[in-house]
Structures are given as C-alpha cells and as structure tokens.
Length: 109
Length: 340
Length: 127
Image (cartoon, each protein chain N blue to C red):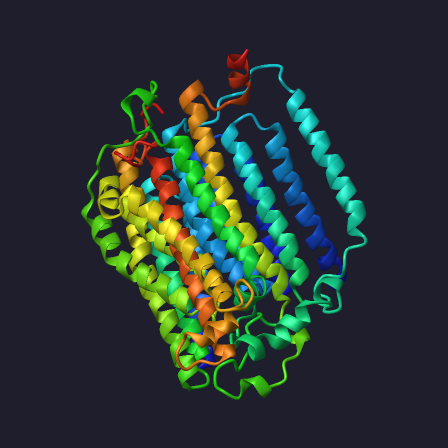
C-alpha cells in the first residue's frame, strides 16, 4: 500500500516537473498550452489519488468521508482544468497567434 | 510547521511580488498577483491558519484577480513609459522604503520567537478562547466561535463596511441617465459576444455545484474551516462565472440591481436583527444565549451555536450581493449593458 | 537551522512590506499602485498569522468536537494554534477586498475623466 502511494505521488511530481520544462522549452504558444493542460491535470489527479490512498490507511467513516471529498476535488479538476486550457487556446487563436512553423533551410529568417 | 516548505515558499513569494510590480503588461501583472495570493495561501495553511487561507484563496486568488482583469480590459493594457527626467519619485520612494525597512529591522530583534507557545500573543486571552469554546458555545472551530460570538461586534461592523464599499462602487460608477455620460473611450475587448459551446456547457454544469458547495461551507463553518465570508464569496463567484462565460445580461436578468442591493441590505439586517432580538428578550446586544427562550428545544449553549449560524447566513448573503455588485459595475463601466 | 529560519521569516515579511510600499510611492501607473497596496496588506496578514503559529500545534479546530461528552474533555491551549490573530486577519482580508473594489472603481472613474492612468500625465492635465 505504501509503495503504491509513493509511486503515485512521485509520478505526479515527475509529471509536474515535465510540464514545467515543457512550458519553458516548447517553441510555440499552442504546444506550450498542450503541455500545460495535459500535464497539470494528470499530475494533479495522480497526486490526489495518492492522498486518497494515504487517507484510507485506517478504514473508518471519517477517513472515507475525507477520501470522498478529495475524489470530488479530483472530479472538479478533471472538468475545469481542460476547459480553462481550451479557453486560453481559443483566446490565442482568436487573437491571431500563428502556430510555429519549422524554418526551411535557405529561407530568410 | 515544516521549515523547508516555509523557506521555499517565502522565496517564491518575494519573487512573485517583485515580478508583479515590475512587469510592463498589466494583464500579466494581474495573473502573477493571483499566483502570489495563492502562494500566500499555501504559506498560511502550513502555519496552521486554515480559515484565513480559505478566505484568501477565495477572495485574493479568485475575486481580486477577476477585478484586476476587468479593470485592465476597460483601460489600457500596458504601462506607458514614464516621461524623461522624472526620477525624483523613484529615488524618494526607494529611500523611504529603505529607511522604513531599516527601522523595522532594528525592531525585529525584539520580536517574539517564531512558533513560541509562550509568546505574549498566545498567553493572555487566547488560551481562554481555546479551552472554553466547546463548553461555552458547542462549536469546535475556535476561529468561528471567536469571530461570531466572542467578537461579534467586530464582525457586524465589518459586514457594514463591506456593504458600504459596495454602495461606494455603485455611487462612483453607476450612470443611469443619458445626460450623465461623458465621452467614454472604447474599451479594449478581443471579440464581441464570443460564443463557445464548451465553456458555456461546463460553466452551466459547474454553477449549481459551486452554489451547493458554498452553502455547505456556510453551514459547516462550525466544524471545519469555513463560515459566512468564504461561502458568500463563492456564491458571488458563481454568478461572476456565469457573467464571464455567457453575457452580462444573463446575470442582470437573474439578479437585477434592485435585488442585489436588497440582498445586501437583508444580510446586514439579519445580523443586526439577531442582535436586536437578543436585546428585546432582555439580554445584551448580540448575546445569543438568550435566544433559547424562542428557539424550541435548545439550551443556552446550543442557542449560541444557532445564533452563530444565523449571523453567518446574514454575512454570506451580504458578501455575495456586494461581490456581484462590485464586479457588475467594474466590468461594464457602470452601464450594466455589456460586460467582458 | 531553526534560528536562521525564524530570522529569515521576519526579514522576508519586512522585505515584502517594503516592496509594497515602494510600489505605492514610486510607480507611475495607478493600477501598479493598487497592486502595491494589496501586496502590503497581504504582507501584514502574513506577519500576524506568523505570530499565531506555534510549534507542534495543530489547526484551531478542537479535535473530538463531535458527540455529547466533549464538554468534559481536557483541552490544552498549547496544542492548538492561536485563533485570535486569525479572526482579526479574516476581517482584514474581507475589508481589503472591499477597499480594492473601491480603489479600482476610482481608477476607472479617473480613466473616464482624463483618458489615462499614468500619474504624471494626470498631473499635467490638472495644471
């Protein structure tokens, strides 16, 4: 049980780190939003899952209630975070942000 | 109190504060300010102040960011460069800040130790509140019992201050008659009445659950972090979400300005009214234990708990109405016809 | 290490307050001044909350608060964080959002009248 919790939380942490690296290193607005949206949501869900398992170490009514509340937060994040990503990306598209094109050799910058 | 989290979050908070005031783009400054608020909220949770962190999360990282963004859309988006040669304000400001900082540093040597249970702030009155809150009021949350019962006068005047702030915003901005309007500059908007199915659907689904959660926060404030303010702000934020994802007219058709001001009034009236009822029954103002004479099947201790719930409801209604009023007036330049 | 952390905490609060103060005095744009005011307010709240923190103490919600025999349980004041500064700061946060709303409304009214939000241009137009 403890191993599972550690695996979930460390996986969530690693995904957060990868998301941050992606936001900094991707060349273009749309690919950065891709990294931010997917990475943020998934890593939050993994870490919350780890927290629910940690809560359920003692199995009585109070901890089940706390675990249910954490699952509700996870459902909310699952609904709201991709919508927010969609909103930002749509706003970028409507403002006319152009996708990144790979520069062909021989073209002027 | 884990010192590693303390150190790292404090460093991040200072970096965010620097970034907020240095950036040239006001929209970025508003968003970095939201991040700064959220980091403060983490810091306060780690120090054990969960009620304060909850309020800051809903108010600072939520509503304040929206108000800043609303203002940025109505005025200019970037900071213009200062005209040449006006460096006096900067140097004087820096000098004043440095001198003040040195004075505070000199006083800092005499501050009580961090986390010391024997510091003067924790010695004289607060142990009474902690040890007697269950016996006196049957409310486990010491912050709620101090806020609503032991220091009820403060909270009543604070609700009145919130109501006054809403009235001030309405008085400054609201323009009803055509002759009052001077030449308004064109607000900077990206697209007019942009419809998006996904955002509208998700926010339509989320709003009832947000309001349910806000009511849960108000009602459960006795046993968990929460209470009237947090619930009221979340209720107001649900309306702001509707106004952002749909149109401003949707919110004004559901909550007209008259209803808004009436709700703000009713909130303060509930609070003061419970106090007056206590006065009429023969006890002091806001002494809830006398309410056991009119509430069925409660003793004086449980009557205090029920009285606290009553005033928390009043506070929630008032705060919700005022948050909606401030947002509506700020985002539509006082005209209440077309928002963000 | 604990001593350094304790001192570091207080220095950071003073630094944050001075950042807010500098932004209020020296920045040209009115919105930046309002942001500085908010930074100052949250730094003050951080200072008060840090006074109320106690080592090895938990949040100020009395445990075992449910049930009917709780009035006879012994409650130790040193186990719980000090709730009194929390209450004061709750009031401070809510009042600060009210102040923020009014400050932004005044900024909007100034922009409507002078068509700019920069302090030096407003002072030029006032003369």
